Length: 180
Image (tube, one colour):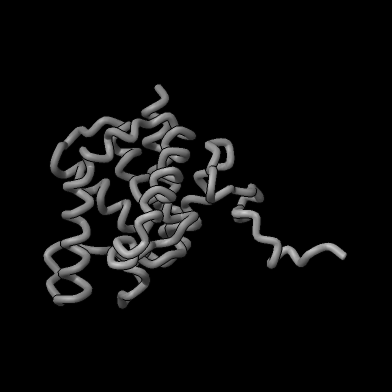
């Protein structure tokens, strides 16, 4: 008798596009932008502890917007890094900061996934440090809106389907420009 597929854990997940992704050893060829967009648009930022729903995909779009506002003409590669800076969360989930600190192995797992994603699309992980200030700025804007009632920046609150569409559209634009 074969083991039930849900109890036969092999460290892999099945993705929306039908791929099998090994969480222990993610390979670039197992990465698909449609899986990333689906995962990020269906998962709530801040561990889902917001009203209204605010997806990780929309957070990534906000980071791109802040980067563009500040630098006027960012390179397509840096825009891809900004868009994909939390892409590992599409597969791993949005681990809240206190839990990340309690589980030090998590950073290694997250870094491996990010490296596979960046390798898949040919972008440099060293650029993560360039977008970090915009990520922090976005988180401050979001935190103020959700937990302090301070709305000093317009957030859209896309539903998952619209977040998916906006995310994939931006990816197509940035990636096309990057590959020129």
